[in-house]
Image (cartoon, rainbow over all chains, first blue to last red; front, side, top):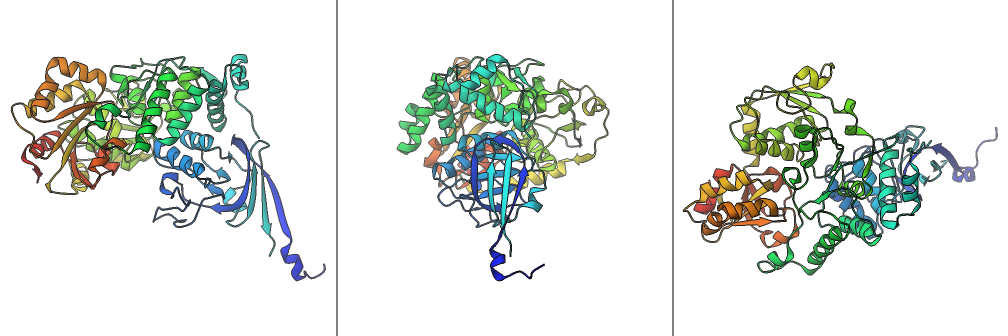
Length: 150
Length: 405
């Protein structure tokens, strides 16, 4: 095997994974992975920044990202209102990949028109890292993860 | 990887738009929920309660359905918003907020909902029976109809409940299925539970301990009253997410602890004594000294509770400068008016207000004020500078004296 040149480092590695569609649509963006549940009411509706001080992603923005997280949290009214306000300001995530889904998160994604999938064929927290480019084609139940091969 | 839920011919037609955009959108939402839970099919609901909130997401969906020509097929009640005409004469409500509230209330009317504007619809406006499948949102109404009445509902959002009201169906999943209604967490109650407020503290503590699950409470000293059960339901959903619980012998689906767990051995257990409840009470004592307002009726007060307020205030006066409010439903107030409770409360300088709740923008005038209430749920919303929580009797005494502590 030839030793890799520096140019090879810019090569991209794309992996396609099957998933389970919940809310349809297609969205692409930079991945943001949260190991903790997310409450959209605790993001800033004008910037998308996570305001919850104790959250592992405190100060990071969910805007236009493909958000990978275990589940939603908090009451139905605030969760839905939170994501809806982000969407009204064009600051909602481009798509969402979750492990555990519940009714309120489905309703939130539906109203905000954010593609939502679960049951990725590999553990999403191992298959996707913050910074990867991720395309979620919920309608065809395919998630494509592209990573810079450095 | 998707096996879509089975839909009947009519359900497919609704999804295809044959019955208009409003019903189509409602069906799209129900199909998404059904797919999320791998529901096999949809089942009829006999009634629904939409936890309208007067917020923007709420407005978007109810207008989408109303503008699309949808009408509720089964009785569907609404949660508190606020009566603009009533509040405009007292407070300055920002025009943007008022406009959202006006449009929300108008859209629920157009979609054919019963305009109860009440968070306890199961008491008078929309009463399920044992075994009925329903779609009840409102975090305190969901556990009440599941556990106390034995009707079957999931923890709905306002929009999924409204969609079910419009379609007359819900995907079959979760608490619609008998197997999922069994206990998951055993709570041994060794607290004395002397009054309604103790059930408030009990609910608050159970929510904290259990988080998400089906608690089974044993050892209650006596049969809880309607009001005590309402308080338990409301507060266990402030600190946790409890859509179903059993109090064997008192709630309807289990006579014994064994029956509540359906033969399983509970993995999680906790004991609650007066000590824990006392600590929770202390946690809620966030201020002493002068107060600006007292807010009761979260959840909406029953007729019995309004009677108790009237008894405590009879012949007395609310201290100058203090606003005293008791929130209830229009149905209950009509009877409180006739019975004379409203007259006594008003004579003392208090007000009985309908159609609204503490978590509505109509109270913006109190933003920088200190209040007192008997409901941790009411304090939790943090719309005010500070809210102290104590018993109804304490709230009334503080209102008369002008200060607490």
